[in-house]
Image 1 (cartoon, rainbow over the protein chains, first blue to last red):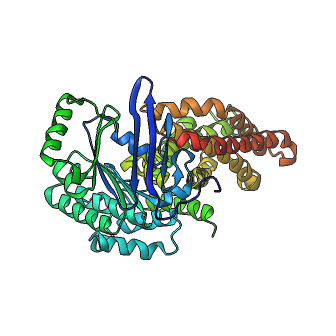
Image 2 (tube, rainbow over the protein chains, first blue to last red):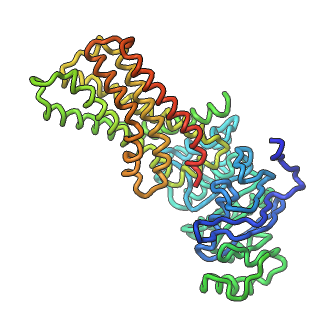
Image 3 (cartoon, rainbow over the protein chains, first blue to last red):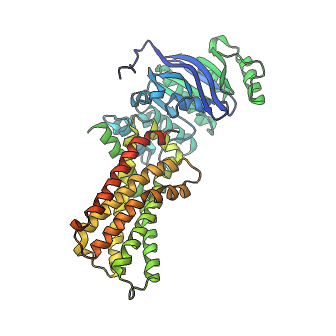
Length: 254
Length: 226
């Protein structure tokens, strides 16, 4: 791994430079550049089809960029090295859990895939963290959407990753489940995990993050520290972007 | 245990626990294979044709067609709830995922074949006991080739909307050398010939098994990428 050294804790968690992903004529990600330091929480907003999920897929190594570079935890995502995947956890719309296995069996399986020394202990610990320990012997098929999302968090943090990617994690959750998820994210943020979250929930996204981005037509039209923005203006700008599915107030590339 | 091997065994363990709970894969494969044999037994007049001449073809049609159902189901299980994404996000070499699925598919199909063999023996009135070990060797070679190529192609087809149609279209033409080899060898074994008489067929089938596994190792990384 000489050309893919793991950085020390003072370095950036995520470095993205002129990242592009094209599917034929469609530019899903179009020249995005940004940096996140360790412990940062970035909320990415944007209308449907803006390329947010594609951005996360590139940063997690699930798909290769057409051009540009991205380094996550110091590793080049295009290399797709297993060491990088050990540093990240991902929560998306789909829970990535086997419906016919119990919650415990699911987590033990993923614990083995991550090479944890004692997967049973780690699984039980995270099940307790997300409040699902009493349901550890129940099949995942019987879980509600909120419970699935909590179990999905448990799967994502099972190996104690330093960087978390969340792709619209509040989709389909009721208020109680959203609040539970928010609490977990706050705890993870307090533990200095770097978090990149895409969401349509403006109040939720702005409440928790310390950096905000607005992605429109594959580009970051806006990227600022939370302390530098007027939340009401941002909300108006976001709703305009969603309504028009383009940035009507003028693209301001980062 | 080395991480690569423990990841393979974790995938096999997960598939076995799932199958023990649902019994979807085994029951579907077994019933289909049984139906194929029953249909043939009523369509072939065994007083005119020798069972040892038509039997090998019927046996392998039953194995391969029911095996295709198993392959389709195997990767559909990974696509449900985005589980494949979870697997791909784990720090596992893609070949560990391939070998885990290959071993699961191979063991499930072999168990189904072992249940079908006695029924085949009864329906076709063929004494398989005296040819059991050579026959098991040939079944091993054929099943390995089928699962090696089938696992690769089912992972490829799992991303397609028409996966149930695409898998057989892709699989059967590429599998022809192995199918010819195992059907010929099964016929020769049922005719009482020793394995030493069929070294050419053993060589051909083994070579294709190795080629399928080799090609899979080289391409699985790209095939599993979205």
